[in-house]
Structures are given as C-alpha cells and as structure tokens.
Image 1: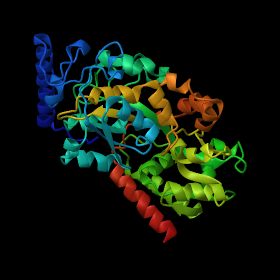
Image 2: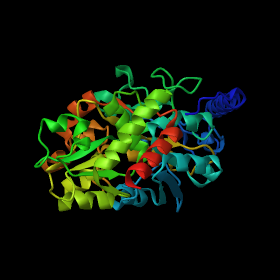
Image 3: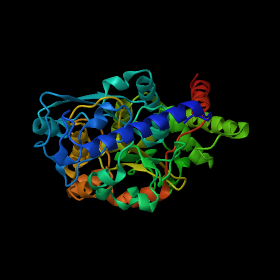
Length: 416
C-alpha cells in the first residue's frame, strides 16, 4: 500500500460505493426489476449494474442451486493464481450452472493490480489477490464491498478459528481509510493460504539446525537460493531480526544487504523457478531451498517425498492468504453463485488437491475434515498450529522496491 494519501480519490470511491449501495437497497424495497434477478432469493440483481454497489447473498444456501438462475452460456471471468483453473475445481460449476469459467492466471500481485488499474477490470468478474493488496484494490475503486451478514453462512461460518473476525482476523475487512480493521467493511473472502520460509531435506539437515535460518548460511549444507526477491528479502529480514513491514533505516538496509550477499556467496545454486528448485531438491543437489513454502515443495510431498518440509524456524515465517474479491462493473447473473461455489467445502477441498497446480491449505474446516490421512500428511495439517504460532501475516513491505534492488545488487556482487 502506498504511503501517500489521495483524499480526493478516497472520498470519491467512498461516495460512489455508498450511493450505489443505497440505490440497490431502494430497488430491493420497491421489488421486482426483471434483470435476471429473482425475488425469491432476496437478490433483485440491481447491484450487478451499479458499479460499486455492495454485493448481497441469497439466504438458506440458495446460491448453491441453479434453479433460480437464468444462466445460458454465460462466462464467469476470474483473475487468480495457479490451481484455480483445475478441472476438478471449475468443471462442476460449469456443468451445474450451464456456463463457462474463464480463469486467467498471474504470478505477481503488483502486475495483476496494475493490469486491473489500467482498465482490465472490465475483463473480469472476480479476482484473487494476497490479502495485503485488499486496501490498494478498494482504495483504487476496483472491488466491491460484500454484505458480511449475508455472506457469513457461505464463508466465515465454514472457517477455522484463525480466520474468525471475533478472534481478530482483520485481513478481509477495511475501515473508511482503507486500513485493515476487524470491525470494518468486508471486501473479500479468504480462499487459500500458506507460508513462506525455507524447505529442508530432513534426512540431511539436523533438527537442531532446522530451528534457525542460519542453516542457509552454513558451510555444511548445499543451499539453493530461489531468485524470488519479493519473499527472499522478507525472510532475510526475519533472520536479521528486522521488522519486514516497517520502513527501514539506512543502517537496517545495509544489514539486509550484507546478509543477502553472504547468502548468495554460500549458495550452491541460484534457481529462477519452482520447477528447477524442486528438481535440485529431489536430485540431492541441494539440502536447503531458500526461500520456499508449502506452495513450492508441496508437489514433492504429493509425489511421496515426505523428507522435504517447508519448516518455520524460531525466527518465524510469513503467512499469505489468497482472498477473493468481486470487481466493479457489470456481472453475469451467476456471479454470486460462483463466489458461493468457490467457498463450498467440496470445492475448497478440491482446491487443496487440484488436478493441476500447487498443493496448499484452505481456511475451511469442513474441507480439512474431508482430507484422508495421506492428504493430511502432504499438506502438514497436523503441523499447522505450530507453523501459525511461529509466523506472522504478510501485510505489505512499504519500501519493497528499494529492498528488491538490494537483493538484485547483492546477487550481482556475490555471483558476478
């Protein structure tokens, strides 16, 4: 999130959202606009054509039913991460609601945000970002507020305790200044989560060494560095005892630089993508992958290589939460059905175990309860509480551009 405050834009966005929501409420009181809505669901459909209107949800699980929809060949368009496009995730909805889903994948929150902000919001209905981008999306007027009470039965009522508003989970809610606030307005729903740390071959790395990121700087292990500065600089800062989510002093930046140079100097290899990193782990070329997480080494574990674990040491890890939003602009008649479907326990379970893409955890307790013993082992369900207790939520690095440059310069210095 940017440091400057654009009051005129914020005021415009808030005014537009409130006006649109009021229009929707008035239309609902007057009843029955024949625009594809259905009065029996409590949704007259007027919100779909009001650019920033709050999104309602039909009660009594009606959004799971196709009986009250008028879809015929519509396409739901979703901008999101790998795994969501899997056939076992999308095909059941397409079949039940007689529509198509167009899933467009991205690998960078920043690139996806800039794409939407440049006008591509017209091309999509739903977008799933890491939760730290929710304030930027709302402040830019790109996403709609959601009616919390209406959506709660489809979403938060299904989640584990960690993701409950009353327990302090704030990363789906924003106050009027677009800051996270558990008492604020709902703008997105958690869909999938995981952690960033480092991955170890537990047959090689001792339990005592696994307790600290120092192992990645140690001579006795072959270390592979994943050239992913976004996460890399955050984990370096945790190792150095520096708060990743504060603005950093020149002295702190120099410490980060020195540690990053030392990391690259100790590396047996530098890897540009997940595939090459996992190949190096599986081949025994490296003992430690820095950085890694369940979204990276999960594919190895799914293949039966349980010796590879994304460990969270004493310095901590970082939790990311993919959060699904509904974009401004017009929506197809089945748009709310799609959001409810993606949050259904069966769908969320399939998203943990997709036919293509990464292997990650979801916040849905009902989905976790559906996992068999092997799936729980692959996903490390029984380790989650310890991982969560040691980690902190990713909330955005204010001087990320500067620190990415530090990473790149350190890599050049060490490997050049």
